Length: 189
Image (cartoon, rainbow, N blue to C red; front, side, top):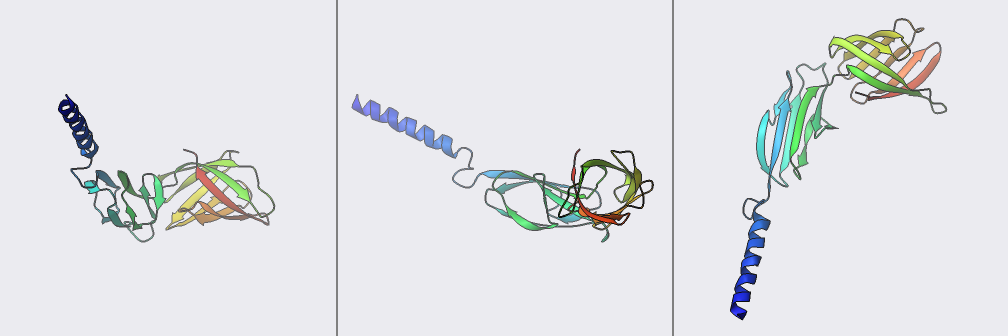
């Protein structure tokens, strides 16, 4: 009877051990998935595709835009990163490379060291990610141009305000009617 209990206990222990290693490819690290999506025009490594990698593998990446006056962004699980670098695999990852495209709705905040103006929404539209028209939530509008990382917005019907800044951070300054303020924006799409 005692031997039968010991055999049953040993069987239970062996089954538990086999279950604990079933997701680890034997006795190695668990396999994870690296899914790489590269949008039109961008190039680099790793190339587009789905890869099986081991947990704790170091992944090096480097990507280039179609031309030097275009900014790209690398998203690792939706978090923005530089166009080259490395990361360690702890979980499955989707790496997306794309041209920075500001078209859509953005919530703008204007400020100096002393004041913060009310927020407003600005909608960017256009046929390409490099130029188009914009309209703010008050109904004023103008044109926008992207050159590399630089953004210039010029109102056509609100005094002489010109906004300049950077698309990678969506921050900058504006000047008009003798007033200079800083701005920052976040996507509201």
